[in-house]
Structure formats: C-alpha cells, structure tokens
Image: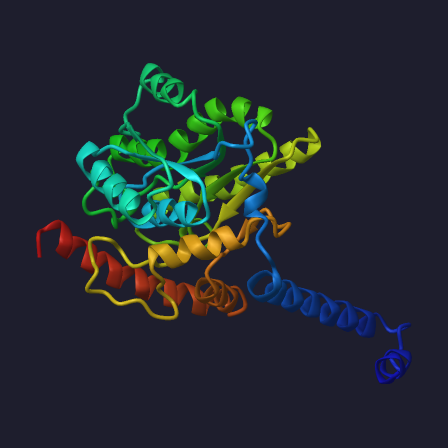
Amino acid sequence: MESQQILSNIPLSNPISILGLVTALYKIYQFSSFFALHFAHRSTLLRFRHHKDPKQTPWALVTGSSDGIGKGFAEELCERGFNVVIHGRNAAKLEGVKAELKERYPKVEIRVAVLDVHPVSEKALDEMVASLSDLYITVLVNNVGGSGPIKPVFRQFPELAMDEADTLFGINAAFPTRLTAKMLPALKTRQPSLVINVGSFTGRMPSPYLSVYAGTKAYIESWSQSLGVEMKAEALDVEILGLIVGEVQASWRRDVPTNFMRCSSRKLAYDALNKVGCGQRIVTPYIGHAIGGVGLDHMPEWLADKILSGVAKTMKAEDEKIAKGG
C-alpha cells in the first residue's frame, strides 16, 4: 500500500519525473537480475547429460585443458558426471591430467585429443573431429586462448609484428570458430546441447598494451551473442553461453594467492557451470569479477581509463620481467 501511495504521488505529467521513475525501475531490475544470477539461479547443466543409449554417459569436449581454466572445467564436468575429452598441444601434460582425473573420478572416461591450435590445417582439424565421432558429445567448452609463443604479450601496438597479430587471431578467434563450425552439426542432432565460449574483460573494456588480443576477445563475446540468437531463431535447443572472465590464478604462478578479485581456475569453472540455463547470453560467472566490472562501468570514463592504464603498466612490467626469465 505504501509503495502504491508513493507512486500515486509522483507527478507523471512531468518528463523529469517519468525519466527518474524509469531509471529507478531499471536500476532495480539490474540489481534483481544480478542477485538472481549469483544467488538464486539453479544450473540446468544436467539436462545436457543425456545419451541415445540410457545406459551410456555423454561426453564434453574442453579445449585448452592441460592446465588453467580448461583443466578446471574438465575437473568440474567430471565431478558432475560427464565423460570428458581433454584437448591441448602437449601430449605428456594431457596424459598427466588424464591420470589425475582417472584417479579422482574412476567411473568417468577420459579421452585425450592432441592438436596445436595455431597454425592448424583444415586436414588436421578434420582428423581430430573425426577421431571423436564415436563419442556422444553434448557439451563443447571453447576455452583455448592466450598469447601462445608471443613473449612478452603486453606491448605498444606498433611493436606487435603482423605475424604475431595473426597468431593472436588464430588462437583466440579463428580456432574456436572453426572447431564450433565442425562440431555444431553433431550438436544439433543431440539436442539439448551446450557451447560455452570463454571470453575476457579485456574484450569489454579498454586494454592498453593488449589492443589486438582484446579485439579477439571482443569478437568472442559478439560471436557468442549472435550465434545464440541464431540458434533460437532456428528453434534449436543449443544453448550458447559466453563468459566474461577477469583475473584468475595462473597455473604458472601458484605463489600469487587468490582473493576476492582473483579466483582459482576450478572456482571459475564451478561458477560458470552453475550459470548454465540462466537465460542470459553473456555472463560474468565469478561474483568478484562481476562486481569489479559493475564498478568500472559506473565510474567516470577518465577515472576508469586512469585505473586501467595504471594496472596495465604494472602488468606490462611484470610480463616483461617474466619474458626475460626474471
């Protein structure tokens, strides 16, 4: 009754009052959506754990899963009852991950797929996909990404050679696109199915010294949104979920601890899978990253630029030190 009385006292004939009311309602909607996503939503991941043979277990393919976020996804998918294909370029590391997963999840099957994502020929990619054709894959996680052999990666734009730019495009944009194009026909026949594309905050906000890399991550976000709407337009039950990821504890820097703004790879994967079925095309799965993003979105541009430039310069110095073996 009190809320109705308050609304009735607002002079809606005044355009400023109408604008204020609309703005307030939109902010309430944003807060409610944020709360629902991170605290109330229940994942629908298990609806993708189906098989044409009820006695069999479906598979998930996770690219770039020899360590980091990809390994976190492999662990979480095993935890939730999926068989998993782990992909990477280092056969020895993948076999190590396979042994580790089998020890922890003895009932789960693990398949290894070895392929360097850049450069990669059409033939090699076709051969990898064909080698998995006997598996009933219902989940694809496009996690592979990064800078590959480019050291250091933080540079002023003119310092980046065009072949290095091609490498960044190949790893972060071209490979996920090409792999998904080859996997999608099978995923369409195994509905419901799921594609998760791992993006980055670098593609959403100004990223000094990472302009080309950031551009590839912006592509992942836009491509995910467009592909998701395309699936709906075609009345296909293929969920496309794009992820925005901030700082994650690196597998090669375990000495750097996790905190509210830096989560572990396993935590990121856990939160991401818990967002499946939320109804949003793009999500920031870890709440610390999400709050940080909201803060940057709502501060003056000059202040955000100053903060991001300062952070980028610090990371550039650290990246250069690591590249020199320091």
